[in-house]
Amino acid sequence: MKKIVILISGRGSNMQAVVEANIAQAEVVAVISNRADAAGLQWAEQYGLATETICHQDYAGREAFDTALMARIDAYQPDLVVLAGFMRILTPEFCNHYAGRLINIHPSLLPAFPGLHTHQRALDSGCRVAGCTIHFVTAELDCGPIIAQGVVPVLGNDTADALAQRVLRVEHELLPQAVADFVAGKLVVEGNRVNNLSMADIDDSIFLKN
Ligand code: GRF
Image 1 (tube, helix red, strand yellow):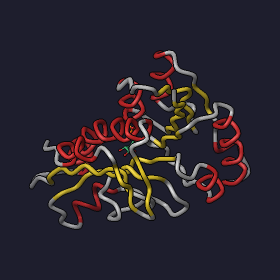
Image 2 (cartoon, rainbow, N blue to C red):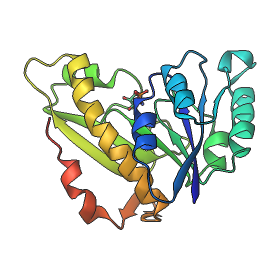
Image 3 (cartoon, rainbow, N blue to C red):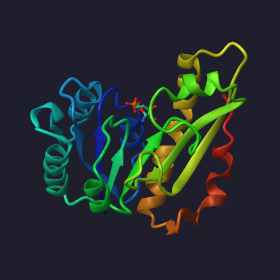
Image 4 (cartoon, rainbow, N blue to C red):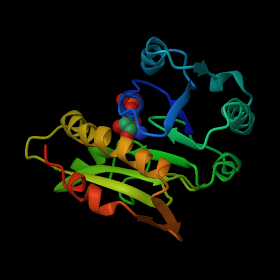
């Protein structure tokens, strides 16, 4: 059984998708938030999961917070740490500590639009497609070997919110699949590429339409 710790900051719909996928040989051992008011925490508690809040404002700086966060995560001895809407930039020490077992979901087709406001930036750039990326986390923000990407069309009358909703539906399919592939040992990192031994299985999901 592989142990998974999920980090969230807000709604937690991607965390929920992973939990509800009931991935074989995987157990979500804790959900940790940097915000006590994260709606996803309540959901996780009601589901019966262990939850914790480690408020970044209680720490003098990024290093101190990340050190405390690592200690709490490591208490669960996770095989995988999933950033599911965790809105903190992590220190290189944190990223290195979990190298190869830390994944993030980002709402753009990386390497386009790292950082915030991805959907508005996609619209402003006149993109005809948008989407999401799941990647292993390295010290550079929103970089790291790409595990999976999902694509949706950009429609003529799209707003950032409408596009975000369309992308989110794909996120909810791709993230549990990526976690399942990790748990099954199907993700082989070679340099900056991920060789997904089950790629044939996810070909259809890459081109999900709204
Ligand atoms: C998602 O769009 C995710 O890609 C981004 O933040 C959002 C979190 O949504 N990193 P939720 O908390 O999972 O509902």
